[in-house]
Amino acid sequence: MKFINPKTDYAFKKIFGSDQSQDILISFLNAIVYQGETFITSLEIIDPYAPGRISGLKTTYFDVKAQLNNGENVLIEMQAFNVPAFGKRILYNTAKMYVNQLKLGEVYPELRAAIGVAVTDFIMFNEHNKVISQFTLKEDELLLNYQHSPLKLVFVELPKFTKTLEELTTITDKWLYFLRKAPDLEVVPESMLIIPEIEKAFAIADRVNLSLEEIDDLEKREQFERERIGAIELGKAQGLAEGIQIGEQIGEQRGEQRGEQRGEQRGKINLIKRLLKRQLGELNQSIEDSLSQLSSEQLSALAEAIFDFSSIADLSSWLETNCPN
Image (cartoon, rainbow, N blue to C red; front, side, top):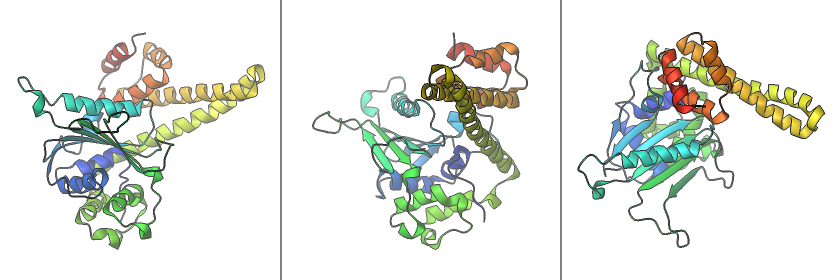
């Protein structure tokens, strides 16, 4: 057996957000958000996974959204790269999901809590070693929960999970192990087969069960992520070399830091250009000049939006809206 990597956003959506994934998502959320307690008994997956939509909107394609049996809404996202303001983005999307519940004529008592779950393949909080961190609104000194706890943010930092197969004791441990180790396994461990939802997740993740269209889409995402990693590493290498040269003029340490930043920025720009050319074709000089002027945050935002574009006009419109200067 060979399993797809659930740490890629595309595979994560297929495993946890397909039409047949309700029981898998229930088990996963109970394990991650409610420490294995059977709090969620049913849910509805919103905008479920369907193959062949690789050029669709990222937010509707790779995020998993569901409404729980108690009316609460949950947004789950797998994030492989630590992009600028990622924490703010999760908070914004969760708050937007909370606000957008009310339709015309509805009143505030009808609002239900919104939960944002971010599974990250990087460390967000260096202050502690907890794998799962949960944040809610609380009174500053007494730490009392705000009435009805309207928002909850849950962060799952996979690099902090280091248990071996023999050390797995809870269903939470087993789901975390699945996320970290599935692509390295050749068979499903017997200790995990006793949980039907995890066994089913492995079945969905088995490459043998993918269509040719799904394999093609998956390979595109994997190639995209490899290029992003390569561009970052190249940018750092170029930055170090440039930094040494600058260091001769303004001091070695300061020069290396500044050069590394410049090189990493150049690597991001080159990667964005390659991805845009693959998506849209050749870029005109005006577009290339505009891309070269983008900040690091603007480049990260553009990387998230690339799959939304179907023409150069879409790209130009995005640049005019998001980067007016």
